[in-house]
Image 1 (spheres, rainbow, N blue to C red):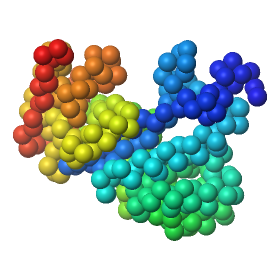
Image 2: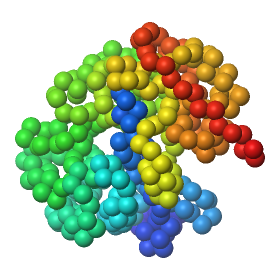
Image 3: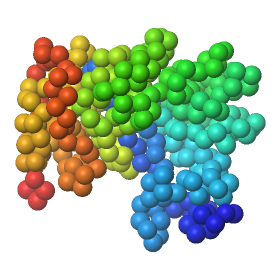
Image 4: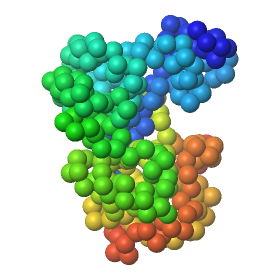
Length: 316
């Protein structure tokens, strides 16, 4: 075990049961429909509190524990999605180390079958570098036989039948101002496969992506990652994200300038959240404020009316 892994005592991530899963909402950019969740692992560190993947996954990789962590995540997600409404999809990020294991797909299929996961309820996001034309077609076909969908970033190798193409945060952050980034996203949409964006944080990013034909997205714009119990509560309570920029399928829009929305947010009028209990996330700076003036310019003038959610103040 390397120095980083020893310093962080990463054995606790797997061996002492200190991991937990949080789920971030995925929405349809055209309708606002809540279409699924993305599973994100957290480490409940006994001394440092709740740690995000960037804080501990490098040490977990150094310790050779990524496959063990992946097995834990797969088992927990498989059990969790069976408690969600039918038609709700969960995306799980998979490491190259897991995919390189020849028995990985067979083991995963057994976990999915044992839990009774519905076909199409699990989407595995596999790194593009882990998919090769010579070996990956059979792997993806085995996953499909188990009812599991496959996504990857960028165009997949020829002959590898993936189901979804993803746009990462780096490309999402550039689509407002970079012609090459927009062309890259448009090329993915032109393949005819569904395209989903990760890490959407501003109104302008969402509007541009929607205009380019991206169908689904996750990111702090739509809600912060949340515990499994809260995820079940949200899914049971309704299937539409009640943000102020959701359109009717023809485009995103708003009824106020971005600056006015900023002033309203300062007064705790929350337009970007699925429900009132996420107010602390705005106060803590975990969710963005729609201050970018490009947001107003990026949407059509004929957008439908919208509702700004006015939550009760804490303590009311």
